Length: 236
Image (tube, one colour):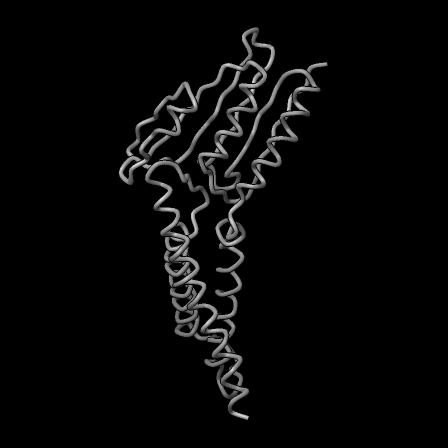
């Protein structure tokens, strides 16, 4: 019986050479003809027809891998598979399988284990929708300013000047929240990337990024939290 499967995997990942090898060999073991399409930072789309050729790619900073699509197809065109890594924010990884049901079930089970093992430890940070951070921040700021600016005695009517002031204030806060959100988004993309390809020079970049994340960022957060908890205790 023929079957089709389409799955989006919404977590951030680190793709190492061994992971790409597992995906490639899974389809090669069933006699599938494979190729890999790699979209790079220099806007060039590179095609690879063998695993060795793919893993030998230098992956320099100027032409770093942004996404990889591994395609497999049987000689009789009865079975096909596509595994996409990177390129989409909402679904950093996705797979599309077609063929006999038994074959699809086998591939799905193996790929689920491989893709789950590629999940980065900071995946929740990398894929968090910043809207759920920005909107509460905006509401809290608006409420705080309205409370602090509330008149001592109630007025019979709202003046034009006060309406204009509140409108400008709201627009200013929206702009402030937007710029803060944009800055956080850029910093997150830099230090907590959704897609990481630890291939070629990307291995050293990933190792350096892990040092920054653990030593600098996580260390700073722990020191701040520790001071917040320890200072009140010492003040007793």
